[in-house]
Image (cartoon, rainbow, N blue to C red; front, side, top):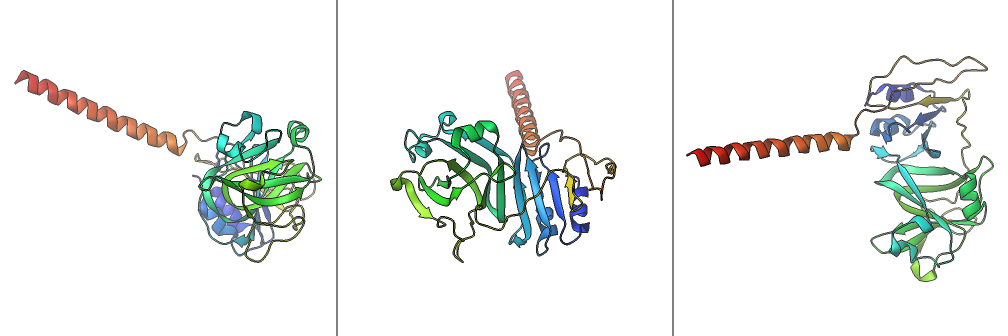
Length: 275
């Protein structure tokens, strides 16, 4: 991956907000989190209308993460075990994160509440659950959540798995753990905060004097382009789309090895038959 955006994060002022467009390349390097750790910098990762808002003060460990997310309605989802945690008449959204496991720190997840979502699950009094597959049960993350003024469903997490946003409570029998109380701050042992009551950043995707918009890529970056000044311009870096994903590279290598083995075996069989 081109490391240009890492250097931009390192060089940013201590209270800078850096926005990274992950739409073309969903992998964010460990070094990005190293660059904001123990600072007041904020790192906002944007992928298909979903924002991840990390604060440098909340980073506890660093690692690569994949920002890909899939969203399903209950009626579209095929995991019967998960759906059985809810009543048949319940409506909800299932958010599937990439298997990142434990995250570098607490992160505010902001999911754009477009008309389809708002019409399906509503705008307020929503419940957030985490599905724990190993126990086939739910953890209550937050409740009484309302759509934010800028049109997002928001909640804090520190682990990637499957999460559910629903207008109705789940079955009591499916509830394994409760992380928070309604409209209250978590206890000291919990790293999850209900977004409706926490002190939240309110970043904008439009250029602001304090935000730098960066786009990571596996390809070389072109020269940075400064937008036409209005007030104080933000730094905008557009990087090209990746040509191959890491999993595609692995598949090509494995395929080549298989072909080589087949050729060697064919040669040995031919030689043996001629003898």
